[in-house]
Length: 255
Ligand SMILES: Nc1ncnc2c1ncn2[C@@H]1O[C@H](COP(=O)(O)OP(=O)(O)OP(=O)(O)O)[C@@H](O)[C@H]1O
Ligand SMILES: [Mg+2]
Image (tube, rainbow, N blue to C red; front, top):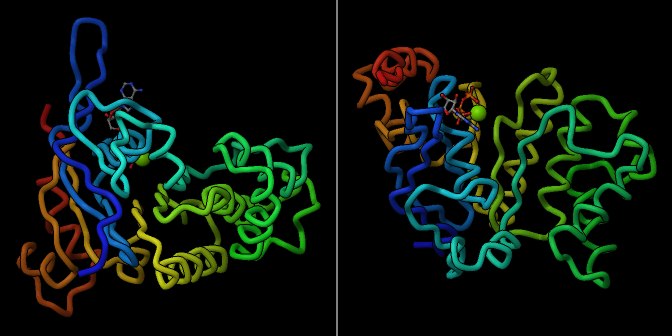
């Protein structure tokens, strides 16, 4: 068995809304191994983004525990955070008037990357996402697909073992989606552990070792695609999209 990179135990995250407490993430445990891609799939509002934020120091979990390569994230958040690349993507997140290189240097410094390592890390990250040739262009001139790759480069700038990608292919054209998938495969082969969310079942089919079905803040199933098809009581040659539709109803939030 390969090394465990991340262990999340009994993660809960509530949001208080006036007099009501909303349980966005209820009691989720999982681990992530070296060279593994795991995916959280479930409907809008299931708690995927809240879970990723809760295990990467963007949000403090209401309760639970997270070990990142032997470091307790809640006790040593900055140290643990340095082991992770966290990518929420989207159209924002960069200084439009600064170049891709300048943006990456800035975010690298925020993540405590040492000055002597920064230049090399930025170049490696740009190479990995195939943006080195446009690294001196302003981020504001980038297409959506290029921006998404720049987001991933930002996630890689501290040279992390763990990468979290929240809907990395959302809103991209077919070619850009293929580029992102190829990139995820390359990173997996390099030994990164990757946590993915996506609504695109082709992403999941192409990239994932283990699937976690999430609904109403809870895990309803975990296992590989074959096991999911058994769980959904569909034939093994059924498409993942149809398989998902069989279980979609049980994932709806009931509170
Ligand atoms: N800051 C917040 N304050 C209050 N409620 C929140 C907050 N962030 C998320 N929620 C709620 O928590 C639930 C889970 O949201 P979350 O964004 O984690 O879902 P998701 O699975 O990522 O959905 P999507 O597929 O749409 O991205 C939703 O009902 C959402 O409204
Ligand atoms: Mg989300």
